[in-house]
Length: 82
Image (cartoon, rainbow, N blue to C red; front, side):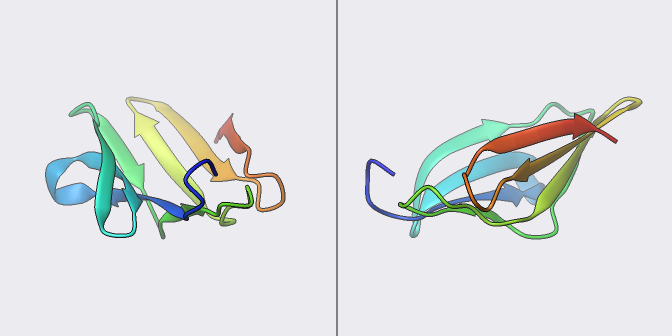
């Protein structure tokens, strides 16, 4: 929001990383633990006005599974066990 540009968060499965992008510029890379499995149907996009895409990711580490989603109206990130 502070940059006035959409920010995209996507999975780089080949390198087991989550990438935060502004256009083609990588803002941040976060490496996932080797035991983590992340199911990403599509990237999350945060718009400058605070809105976000309505998509859920599933993160599994061992026996625990979490759903990670973004409220499309508020841009708030929501997690819960699945």
